[in-house]
Image (cartoon, rainbow, N blue to C red; front, side):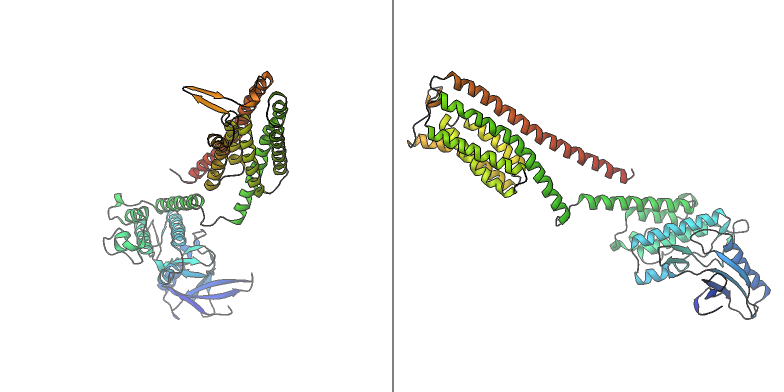
Length: 456
């Protein structure tokens, strides 16, 4: 043995670290402390090695060799464990509660394995649970272990596990008859499930107490799984205080795609207005300058829409709004404010709000601007600044628009206009409904997937 130093002191011997020259590994050597041990003491020491050696479990250090050293003292070699005992961790607060509860589950499963192999540890305590440096957990110090076939009682280990859980939760071991750690430490925020689990492990009557370490481990694991799932759901469902940059970029890309897709539909409707212009020139008696201005605005709007489809900046939406307002006001003046302008304003509002204006303040601005485009010509007519295009006589509303002067062609154009307006409204609304339905389906699917993470 080389680089010898004492790292721990057990009930029957000292543990030292040694180098295995044959396999080139570091091992732990436990050897008797007495220089002249009695035969009975040596038999007890070798018994510990035999009992521990029969337990092949990841949370129990394996025995590599049993023998006597150069001084004649018995020893056995086992895996060298690096870490801190649960007692040390509890004293320093060097681990999270979740890490400690996972270690408790590992210890319960190791004890269940030992009981299945007929072995009772007999001296479980926080000082005999080792938390490894790499997340592993070990049950150590099997010097007081007993065989169930002789006089070992598994209930001793189960009660000891309950006491360990109590101290892990409350920060101090339980007093005689004490069951609930939450009553001892009300300020530690102990979950009711853990409080009940601890009482179940410490109950005095065997019928009220857990009958196996496996049941204790399973219930603790179920709690940890549910808590992990709940934490995951909370992290997913609670939005961050600040939108992550990658999410903001993705949302911007989605908005741009919607903007381009909706602009295509609005462009089709806009070209319908271009087809309507010749009817105004041939059938009505309106001033050609106003009709010409209408053609210019329709063409300008078409170019802006084409720019949007090809990836123009979203900021150009305000120019589109201004052109749309002027176009609506001009149509209201040419055809009478409440004949063609109102449906035109409604469809334009659907297109603008559905595609580019999503913030409440922006939607209000769009609504006010388009409403003003419809009402401004009417207000000018009422004030006498423009010649009236409509009159109210009792219960009769008369539209007196010059463009309607004896022209069946214009009547046909109005029919076409009505069909185009309804069709565009249907297309835009259907697109918005499909997008909304897809989003709702995605949300329901995600909610269902999240519910699968939480058993029961």
